[in-house]
Amino acid sequence: MIKNIGSADKNKRIIIAVVFIALYLSGVLPGILGIILIALSVIFLATSFIGTCPLYLPFGLSTLRKLKK
Image 1: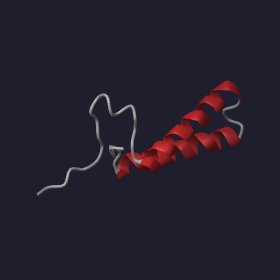
Image 2: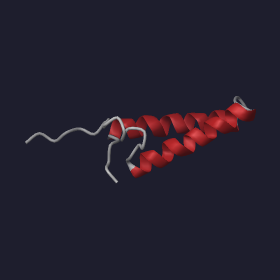
Image 3: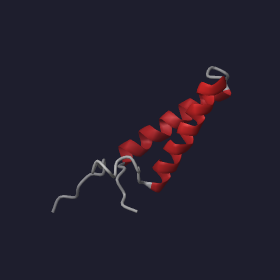
Image 4: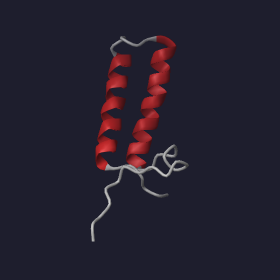
């Protein structure tokens, strides 16, 4: 797969996922909204560890830094 997520993007996704999980576990976001955010957290964590965001591919987006020659 083509890597298209930079380190800053990865860190933001991980932080957001941890916050969503913490809010759900603490009872602040119960019910359907909590379950949706947990699912989103799993997606954020998966894309962070894989390094590829499928939604970026059709648009040609990338947050990776380009190496200067």
